Length: 88
Image 1 (cartoon, rainbow, N blue to C red):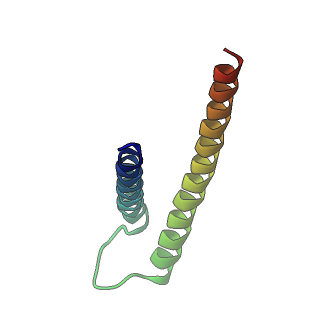
Image 2 (image 1 turned 45 degrees about the horizontal axis):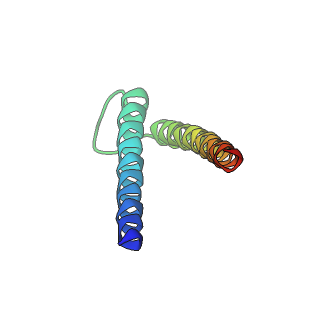
């Protein structure tokens, strides 16, 4: 029963992570498009392509930094919680 519960929790976490990644990409695409493509047409200019590429790269770098920081924080808090529980 416990193993099944953990599997369901893991599945939910994976779904949430996927949903968050999709939302990030949608937001990044929307924001970068608004910033870089001032006159939509049938194709992108080289300046627009460069702008979009750099913009999306910055979004992904920021997401990576935030994710790593958040994961480190969660790990640190989990360790602190476990060490507190052990000393009780």
